[in-house]
Image 1 (cartoon, rainbow, N blue to C red):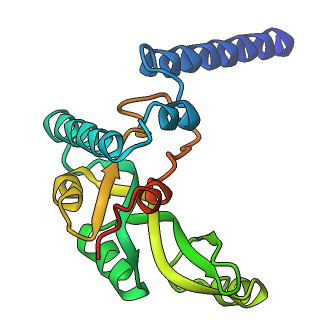
Image 2: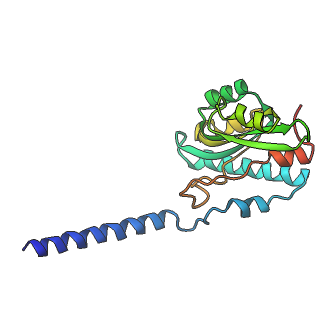
Image 3: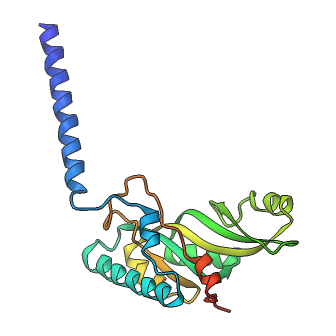
Amino acid sequence: MNMKRGKIILLLSLCLIIASIGVTSAAYAGKKKFNWLATFETIEKSKVGIERYKNETKVKINDLNEKVDANQDIWVTITFAKPLNKQQVEDLINRYNIKIDHLIARAMERKTGLRGTLIVTTPDSDRIDPVLSENEADLKGFIEAVGYVPNKKLRELSEDKLLFVVDPSADDYFVDNPKKKCLKGLFWELEDYGMIVD
């Protein structure tokens, strides 16, 4: 009797697992698996191409505003219009309720002028100074951020003059991205094409 009961429990457990896989698959049906590199490679590497891509993200933000609950958090990559200082980043985080996953900071080697990037989780990370010192580099500011923004704040955030683009392309609304991979920001391209705001 106990053996039969154990088999029934095992069978029910397997059915539940299979059902949950089916529900998960259905939720992502019709969505492409997210591939940040493939997405990045679609961007034409020119001033015109970068601006065109920026305009495409505005269409996505409008789509989210129309079809997604205002309180839902949207996974975004934010490219700043210029390097921002710690206070400017903290103000953005507070004003738009951004839940930061990570920030990208721009460093510049003193001797060579080579650009470098640092990835940190907060603007006051204690990792920054030792890395700068070790590499004889100066911090120019924060250039990108990745995290969640409430949908109701998304349009306003995307219009902030301190930002170049707010890109929601990696959000689950558009793609199958269960591991929350992020898009590469566009700051290097802004530098390369002379598009940094003064």
